[in-house]
Length: 121
Image (cartoon, rainbow, N blue to C red; front, side, top):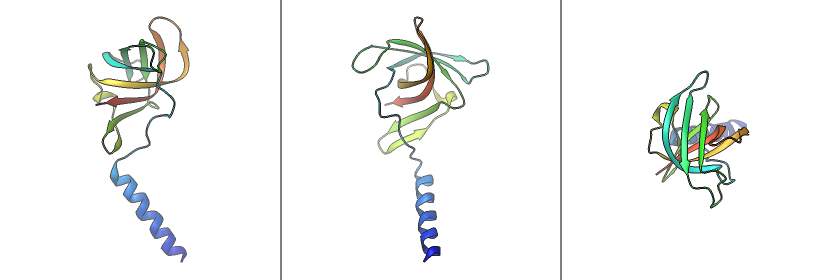
């Protein structure tokens, strides 16, 4: 009986891994929604993106410089869920939703670290 349970868990785990679907972004509204207007290679981080959008409608900022680190989740929203992207796959003109993590420097534009970045179609 125990062997059968382990086999079922193994099959389910393999199915999830092969499907490529990842958990989505946080359930809260994003810190900013907008378009990537520039990408900058980083010093110690992967880089930074400048995101410009419209404040309101559940978001707090209209412009943000977002540091992308090794712990930032970069995702692509698709019809079947979410897939992982790399910093190198981000490009100017991508529509994104960004959730900040940690402190936010209240300069203009705000400066923050991205916890999750989702590229939206």
